[in-house]
Length: 88
Ligand code: FES
Image (cartoon, rainbow, N blue to C red):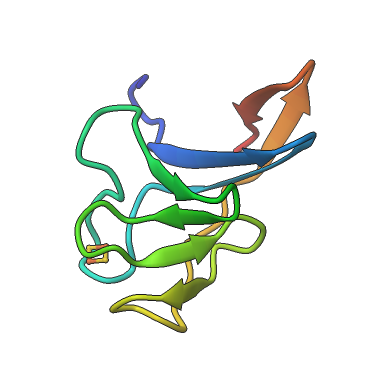
């Protein structure tokens, strides 16, 4: 990660993609344990590796787990030739 850039988690389903700050609203820590590795369930939900909170790809809303009702913070992205870029 370049200085001044914030880590984010990107999800993709077909041609659609979404990105969120890599901060779980439960304990304000990264969603993943291993660098660049995130857990997803059924191409629908992004799962926090710590306490299994589940977030919808399309809006980052937590729909199951210890922070149900909270949401991830979206990151503005652009997609070029199926590659995802941070537009912030
Ligand atoms: S830190 Fe993500 S669910 Fe607890």
